[in-house]
Image (cartoon, rainbow, N blue to C red; front, side, top):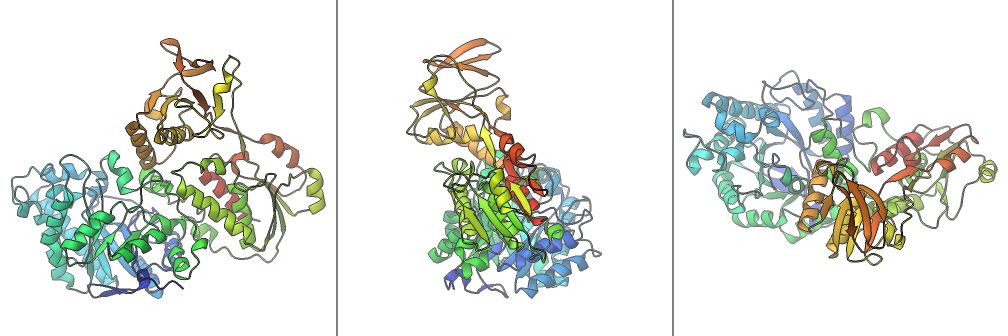
Length: 626
């Protein structure tokens, strides 16, 4: 049992939280389009609050009648409050405190920098009224707290920021006037609810662009509203600025604890408790609390990857925590595409209503899985949880398939941890018989006579055969290492694998050029916007050169021959690294697919493959339905 300070109770206003872990607000798009919390949202929420978290903030609670519909809570609508009361009761059943992030819905559709100077006085008062009434409604259904969102450049921040607030009335000009809008909201809430509802205030510890608010600006502001606030939540950046996205949603390429230094500065200057968000997990959260840099730690993505991560950490089962890989697929689905919440490593998330609990089946079967990559391991894990007897055969001496190479770079620590977790969980499962160095043949299948055969043999790299002299320069991206290539490297292929390779090589001081047929504006497409933004920023800082709308013709002893609208040219280099993608391993599939009546094809060798998300999802879905 973990008895560290992270699991000590904490007082916020008159609210006592059972531990120091907060689920920060996130839009999951699982509410109905009219805003009601139906079974889809409730099933997802149940798993979250049952996992040990201390407090949960429900994101994007709309307090403005003018905008909709959208799959978010509508805290101003009295007819929806009963469905939210169900969430409150469910949270309290697990001793979890529940709050609501109150926003004016215009903030979701119109940049705050526009609103600050176009709002009439009536607009401002209606905005304030909506937030205040939302707080009153939150209290009426038994909620414990509300969060006022003043970070990420939203309305409150845009009013406070001198570079954007050009008003000449009582809401512009002086510090007092620019902060009036939020002070009046906080005062209005306190007049209506007193201390029966705790108030959390989210603030960007600093904004990241010229003219943005500095940490000193924000501490000054926090002091001016401290009398109304029970806890400050420290984040960073401005959502409207694409270049800030990696700071708001730190990626696999970014450091953890990015806001901890600022949180410590707030804590030193204020008497009000401090919560901090930004790239943390349970291990990092424990370090933060032990260091005294903050009083609470806010997480979202680790709780999506594993809603039970808090209880697992508390009970000394850290090895069982399914790691978040900070790919930001979750945010890309909800914020970027307006789709239901999904997670790359947790295939149940957002689909809890459909799959329900993963209960054991009565009519258990013998399942033979061919291939020990991510899809095969997920299928083995899921089939075992359903009570089936599983044999997993891997023809090599290691598990992981192509994902081993995908996780090899120095900066891929999150992916390495996921791979280690996946291997560890199936290796310790007594219901799974793992057979290494075992190539599955028709003879083996007929001998084992499984009820279900799952083929997960992955994909093979696309490696063109260059015929010119100097072909010893060519290496496949999966084999190339910093030691095996020279100092001047050209990468053929600007997909995400090629770009990540460019990042790795450039970090080690190599001069890197990336060649691709697509326009430069399309580089990095296919990943989440925050991850592609972060990666392209880092490639730029390392001086990586891009040659786009160009075709690789051949490789000579001098370098790579390319052709484009300007003709042909040679790019001198020490090595050419090929990153042209993968193709399905159809040969093995064709050889094995007609032996067992119930045969299922998953992962990269199927029609649902190509990414870790698709591989894990297909492995889970096919095994779940057995």
